[in-house]
Amino acid sequence: MIDGRLTALRREMKKRKIAVYVVPSSDFHNSEYVGDYFKAREYITGFTGSAGTAVITMTDAGLWTDARYFIQAARQLRNTGIKLYRMGEERVPEVNDYIERNLKEEENIGFDGRLVSAVKGEELAEIARKKHGAVRMEDDLIGRIWKERPPLSANNTWILDTKYTGMGAWQKIDQVRRRMTEEGANVHLISSLTDIAWLLNLRGNDIAYVPVTLSYFSVSRENCIWFAQEQAIPQTVLAYLHMNDIEIRPYDSFRDYVKTLKGKRILLNKKVVSYRIFKSIPDSAEIIDRPDPTEILKAVKNPVEVNNSKIAHRKDGVAMCRLMYWLKTNVGKTPMTELSVSNYLSELREEQDGFLEQSFETICAYADHGAIVHYSATPETDAEIEPEGLLLIDSGAHYREGTTDVTRTFVLGPITEEMRANFTRVCRANINLANASFLKGVTTGTLDMIAREPMWEAKLDYKHSTGHGVGHLLSVHEGPNRFHWKTADCELKVGMITTDEPGLYFEKKYGIRLENELVCCADQANEYGQFLRFENITYVPIDLDGIDPEQMSAVERRRLNDYHKMVYQEISPYLEEEEQEWLAKATREI
Image: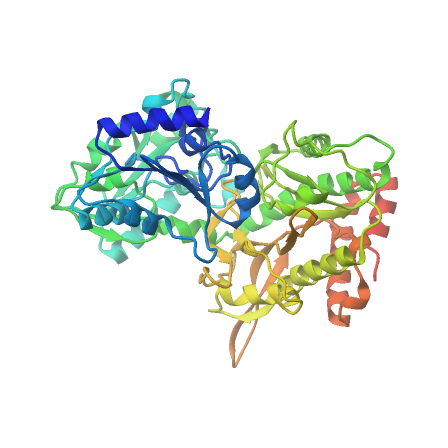
């Protein structure tokens, strides 16, 4: 099947004199997660992960993806003729280096210019220029061969009340306009779907697990224009937009609008705006390339958003604690598989008031599947769960009040001493980062080393970031805040919510990950400056059956005990008597 698709694509490439064709994972808005219409890279390679870039030449094909997907990609690319390039590994070329090395003189590079950011498009154009060739970006070659392509989604948009957001759309637009004035811009173009949703206090259903509406937005000092599909906007939303003086135009008219911006000073983010939109801007316009002001505005949660997030996590904690109680009580007695456990967790969440949907596809990974960082069970891989070993569950939900993301690794029976030692290391990493005290101005990359210390002292590591920002009823992955010593340099600010999720993975054996969400808070100020700290807002026990207290310092044991005391206080009032008794034991002091 993949062979046939590659052959068909190469025929289209040959017709247009394209030597190298690039297929990214994104949509028109450079989104991390995309709707079915945009899964072109999955269509041409068979790889289903959320991140990756395919490069097709007339003789070769390659897929570049990160460490989260190495094992999954290797399995899915088997027998396709597509080579896996493990990003970040030694002697693995970057995508652009590979293209430049394989592009011959006067040959052309092709890609769908709607799916490639302005930054990436310029890089590819420069490679082509060096070889005296050109880029071909107007044709969607995957669309030409994908005969049963799903339609572009256009699902209902709805209003998120200010009792959840803490601020009205017009107040947020005023904040953006102030930032525009600081930059000297008179027009701001926004392509990011989550930024538009946050700005307008609107949510949608155009991407699974990400409640957004396919749209673009333009802000000037005189007006605001929202470019969206008419069928996705009900009358209530039309009235709301009119009340906020926001004009509506068709989604597919945005490019024509951009062409009219002659002589304007345009603020945009070239890492997000598509290359085709960027190239449509008149030459007389001046580009101010900056991160969208909404990126940091939405990352710093206001007090209403923080309080609502705690409510969402309390609800989620009830569901997770009930799952943990059920697992511990029934494993070995009731038949269980990865999919049945995942489905049961979904049912427990659906019982919570205000539940909307999962925030991502649940990772329920038993035994060796736990070593696949972003494993997704299928009917073909669905493992039976036995009363032994480790079960890793990474999951989350959207509630009216906010978004959750939590990972727990459960001990289901006898485990090896190696497993226990590594479980304890992951626990130490998690609680030590959560209890960090640091001066204002410290960056997330610096703090990442607190979490990695227990691993590094054992000459171990994990290849993903220690944590990422979380949207407020938006994408479960949100920037700019993330913990990674190599690639993160965001200053932590009061109100930012970031996950804390260290792990250890051993291929063909097991995996361990523990994840909480932390909100950055002000601590005391003194002659050395303003100190900051974290408040843990995830309320789920860490499985004490995996802990070796002897490997923990007295301070680490106290930190774990304090966390468990909080979990019991937050969750026990919502549980039945038997569940409360179990939770008291699960959160006992060590």
